[in-house]
Image (tube, rainbow, N blue to C red):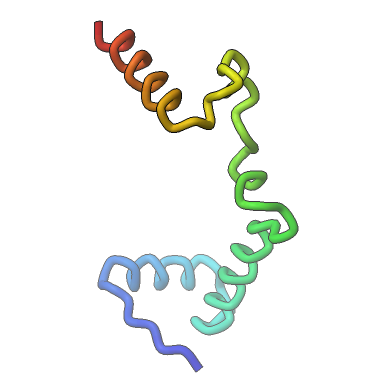
Length: 85
């Protein structure tokens, strides 16, 4: 069993939903809302896939040694310098 404390605004919103839904009690409504939300998660997909995937052209023009710390730092510095000049 789970006990949840709602702030007055959320409690009012719950009451509004209940009055709109008709013949349903709080527990059933909350169960239904949780189930609907759970079904939208699409748990078979990875986090990145659920967020739209990796940017397509993120590293398109990147030098091959970009994984080296010194190269990354220089690339970031160059980007910031170009962006703010």
